[in-house]
Amino acid sequence: MPRALLSVSDKAGIADLGRGLVTRGFELVSTGGTAKALADAGLPVTNVSDVTGFPEMMDGRVKTLHPALHGGILARRDRADDLEALARHGLALVDVVIVNLYPFVQAAANPATPFEALIEEIDIGGPSLVRAAAKNFRGVLVVVDPADYPALLTSIDAGPTPAFRFDLMRKALAHTAAYDTAISATLNTITVDGDTFTRPAAGGAPVGLTLNLSKVRDLRYGENPHQAAAWYSGGITAGSAGFGGAEVLQGKELSYTNLLDLDAAARIVLEFDEPAATVIKHTNPCGAAIGSSAADAYVRARDADAVAAFGGIVALNRPLDVDTAMAIVSTFIEAVIAPAIDPAARDILAKKANMRVVVADFAMFKAAGFGLAGAGADVRSILGGVLVQARDRVAEAQSLWTPDRLPPDLRVVTRRQPTGDEWTALRFAWRVCAHVKSNTVIFTDAARTLAIGAGQMSRVDAVNVATMKAAAGGAVRPLAGAVAASDAFFPFRDGLDAVARAGATAVVHPGGSVRDAEVIAAADEHGLAMVFTGRRHFRH
Image (tube, rainbow, N blue to C red; front, top):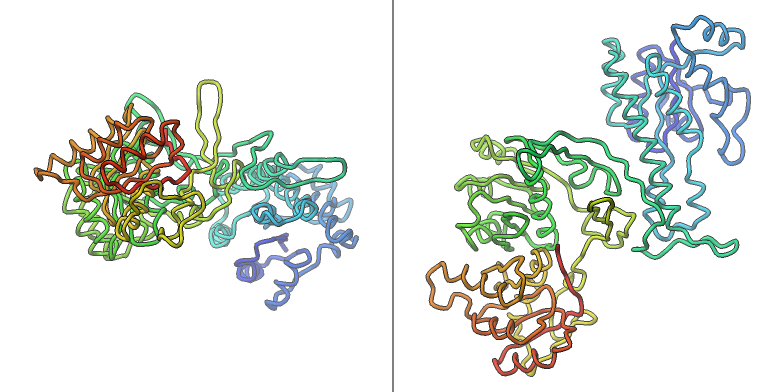
């Protein structure tokens, strides 16, 4: 009778898998909680201690580290001396190993988990079983992901191919590597004072950092056709969240710049709880908007700068439905990303066969508390080095801005207070402004961008670019009544004067210049309301 060893922390699907193995003539050998789950499902199961002849001990710290198991796993099926050694000691082969590891990553993600509890979540026997089975992949099938259970049973029925065995081996060793990387990254954040081990507050920089990356696919090319490029997942990101688990449904092969633009687009719409959309070119928004629906938001964002939106990259924070699909295919769009796509919408999008359509779940990235070693870290290479920073979050704009409910550090510095409509528009502008390349000044109303001056060498230039873009529509004063946002302070009053000439009635920026008094006086002269946030949002 073939033997399967099952010892899992994540018990999803384990009863169905056990049932499938028993049906195929396997003996089930299992540990503690896994054995109970199998027995509760009415399956015959042999406890590991009955195989090893030794009870589990030390609260489960020692249970599978035994020759009776590892001998059966590591024995080479084509080596007579290995098989004779097993027979001499009365040991049986193990043909399938189903293991996933203690939830160290989940425990580490909770800042309230005490240090000693973290240590107990470091799995010892599990990685040993996985590595042993992976090493002997020609004779042992090793599975670490519940998603692979159906494929395992199908493979057993057909006869496992060498390629299937090797794929399981690679996945298993990647699993243990990622696990060890997570442990190392977490321990690198711990400070020690005598016998006291302290976990840092979110945002602390670890003393060492290891990236564990798995290739998702090769890309068409890098920033230019002569540059090779590939897409990887893992590292210090959030596993299968975001682009780590994205699904490409259709379209031409993705390029490096496509993915950068898709990422920039996703970051903008994540700022909003309302239906939101943006159209991106070269990582800057041509337009961004909120609306009553995904379709309404998309049309507003596209029409904010319809000329620039041609050939752009679209992101939505709502499932892409039929109405939105119809609006998207009415013009040329390079790629679109959304958390989900309605089946009927897929048929419409398919009419644009070259348009890349990507589905990805970014929900976890709205959460707070990601530090340098967490899921919200940004990693960037420089010549001979790597830079890591916590992801910028516009936390000060997560709640409504009203005169009686302002976030800390937010203050009106002019004689005139913003009106209710201006408060709404300023908050919208501030959330978008943080995602535009510095130096930037943008103009918006309460629901969409009106003009964007991105990536200029001075703020006056940024205002002038935005004004020029707005004037292209032919209106006499297209930005009259708008609000403006600047990602950093105005170092001189000339930028503020330019904002006023453009027609804005209110402006938001961090403040903090040595010439703040001069800039505030200029705003008062023009009758503008001006708000300081106390927080800069450069984007390089």
